Image (tube, rainbow over all chains, first blue to last red):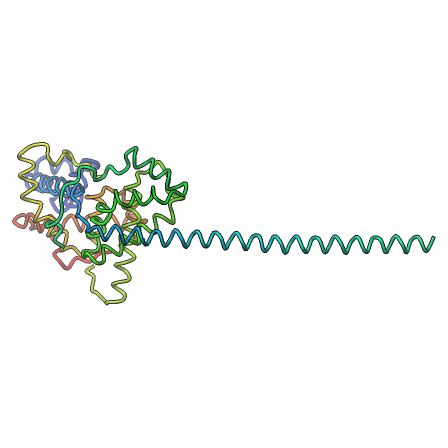
Length: 121
Length: 211
């Protein structure tokens, strides 16, 4: 096996999470160049990992801007919720009115048909 | 990108999933706006730093960060408690940054060339390691800044913020295999920049294109 064939595996192996394939491991075990490259990846990954512990200091206005945007979004959500509630009430009212009208109509029809039956008998 | 100038160590970074934060998340999920505001205050610097690393400018990073918190606020009901809040925010921020970069590319016609717990991941475990980190750090930060945005996003999310390949692929809108290919290219390019004397093989140079 040649160095070029294991090159892609070295960085993954340097993470410590991925094992080299058997043939690649055999090659790296005897190749100082690949061992050096893997050591460089290890150092690089260690430094990259450490970057996570560094943060930029934002200006106070940045946080305030986000909080203001969130507040606006919260108010909008409340308004939407309210409107949705009213819509439900409105639709519910219409349905109730329709049901009442239908029930009333059914009663009238029933009483008329009873009257007709009475007259016929 | 110049992250070096204002960056400072933060002992709380990456641990915003503490019990206290978990309580705030619970309260926010139940509609407590002040709890969410407090979450923003506690995690803003970390989220902004990630956004800055991904998009490379303060102005864009501000926009991305604001969008990320708005999305988080609207989607809080979908946040699963078993994940850390910080990890969830990383994913949202990555997604917002990808959208932002895509939009910017379309508008400005930019040309885009297109966990990692290492064996010893304690950066300050010895004076030698601290010195090594200091020596390498500047070159590496510069090299990361120089990467094409698509390669930079993958290596930052994977090797700095420890997101899984699956999460990275999902948030950047690419396949997992594409994410892995980009990661390989990014790492190789970084190594070539940071250790130029030994960059003879597998060199892709600055013209590397993201898949």
